[in-house]
Length: 443
Image 1 (cartoon, rainbow, N blue to C red):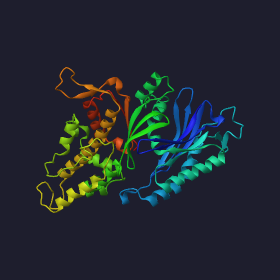
Image 2: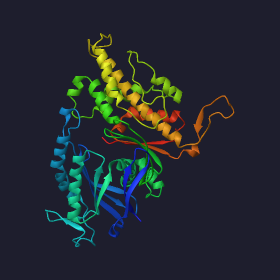
Image 3: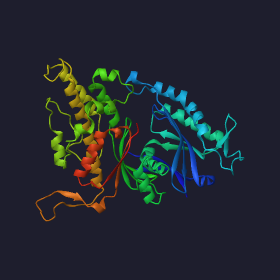
Image 4: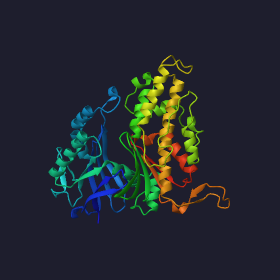
């Protein structure tokens, strides 16, 4: 029987569930159709999605986002974001309605199963309304929640509040279900789903996820659709927020003033690596914890360094608040010292700015990779790498003991190709080369 569960993800790693209720009997059918609303931050989004229970395939009938232009504020302006939701959510719902599929012949004249439109046509009524219930910006969330509740009451259908982070965790499985309808969009997912009898989806449980965005940084293991355990979370600010703040200090003013959006982390990557992956092709990942600690103490050729959080511990936690302060300190010192690398007194030249941008990403991404490796190590059994040489203390995970086969990276920061390169090299170098990587970036 299909059940709905409301999930709370605990920072302490506990799973807290409340209310485990069966779906109404009329929803146990061949497929499900939902109209979905998302207003957790500044994007107003509406989608219509259905899934065929027979094949496991999903299809998007409608998907549209509206994002306010907040470049003048160099970030999210809560009031303007809220006003954008209030202006646009009803408009998007109205645009979505004609994209609902036509009713089946058996329901064409059943007024409880159809929605009449102003043009005289009728459409299939969704089986339920889904909407982001949190976490997010409270007032913005209520705009979507109130709209969704109104539709649910008007259409007399169930209302389902979706946990924002749980949705991120399950996005890869939605992608694989969509690929069954369009194999060319994600051949790997389509092939894996077909090999897995279509309906079970990919990635297979259990899998490990890194959720890295402007609002959240989490490391989570997922063992079923409704069972997720937080292994690590940030103790202060999210990785995406830290990168955005650092970028506003590092990027040349001319680049900031011409930016057409507030995706400063993405702009920082392009500034740091103008030639793309070839600029970091020679990156070498630390091969041990000892190497990690040694690297964390290295000073740059400009005389400054960025310290890696928790470098001396194996604590499963993230911290990124140090970044903005460290970058400002470097810039402040530069403003008081004539520097041969600076374009002028009191200002870093582009060469040093670019190097600083690279170091900011390297240090934060290595911090993310380090905690991921520690989490994986805690899940595995270990053996000596060279059992016939007792003096060699190096160990490797027993392949059969690695419980997860896939690492999923989701959120806006997942779009950073340097991050993907670092994670791959860390996994390969620390005995987890067999893990498959999946990227589900939210742009």
